[in-house]
Image (tube, rainbow, N blue to C red; front, side):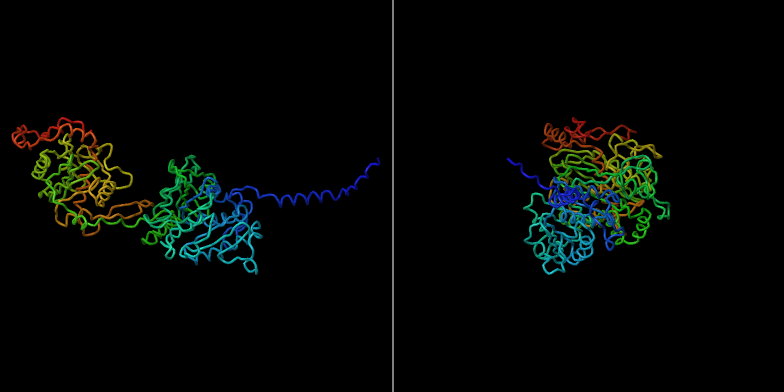
Length: 630
């Protein structure tokens, strides 16, 4: 057989051209590389001159904290991300990167929601359109809306595999009947309570994602008012991630908080950030370098991912400028509120809801002298220049309380007769309705007025009776009853510095309880001025040494002795560290006698002459259980 003729070989110079064409065809047919959002942005995103102060190639390392946020949204195990941030941290550009990534790499139906329709149009024109125009990877993905067959409008952009719909939260029509995989809800604290008559706009948007197993819901906003802030409520349910940076001087890792910004008196323009560990001041260059090597840390476990950022992290802001702005904002509550929201990314605390004294007056009761539920009795004593005001409070398990008596002893606190009368009052037994007699188990006397030494002399020999000199100390984080007493005083007595803010928080919280039971406060019939004093103080947010502090304020013309007495009686209860279960068990083992034992009390021998600290006679079940308070 004759051999087949060989096929002619192409010229050698044609082979590279064929290889190049084949490679190009394979690249065209190949799926896009699997990238995270931050990787896509670093490779493809271009910033536009009309929407960025730094146009050109996107660089995540410019604000490194953005990488963790974008990568969390890329994580297949996460379907909801919450961003509670200040201004000037790049939040809007993060949202733009998410949109660009999904148009280019992961086509999906996307909903971008702004507070109003006008803001939605502004975002589409000023943010989305320039990104589509200037980012090469997006230029051919979305048709020009000016073309006849584009199908695109200002608020609706179609591309292969998906679309971008931009709506205002005040427009119900844009939220209905449209399946959505990716919801980007911007500035949620500015959303109306209802989109027309349809209900909560954010809930309506989230419902549109229910058919997608791989949905993404991103909520972001600067917060507004504490207690009504949508973003704060959402943040509270997350794993609450904070960005930690290492000190350039001691390498201690820490969050950047406003209390770390300090400046010489009257010179906010010289402000520096100071390390919480070594106290060293950081220049802005050192701060920005530290931020570049920082990392996110979650503070609790949750399936929802949450990030909090303030402007101190921003590479586009200086600490000195923030300090100058803070001084200017302090001039009025409105400007200070804006500064807290937009610079610190924190909620503004309005004046606390004042407890209405009239509501307490309307729920007074016809009570016995001491109800059977009372197991512990304490007293709070407020010292005035012409009198002592006293409240005797009975306590039951779960700190349900009864105001047993509000007594005023008039006299000169610098004279011994007034203190003798107080001593006799504290020695009196309180008889319950079932005949059980209870002593005053603990009493707290305010020593912070004009008669400090008189208080010191009175309590010095009465420690065994748990009669204590106290002094109120404000400030967050201070416990109601301290672990140790202070003896740094002229009388060298045990002085207990109580946390009055925590105590007032507890008292006010209990006054708001309207149903008898745990924490409820019972009051007998009393004059209206008592309840006005009990509810006189209000809560305000003031700035102390550069950071917000919650303080109790007494409005001008008001008196608060009744509140002080209740606070001191509550502190006296905390001093006992009562184990209510043991106390109830002791009472059940030793039930009260069928009749009051008045004859035995009247026959009790008088204390020996010269003894100033007699022990009160107690009922049998309390006397035999001497350790129930310890």
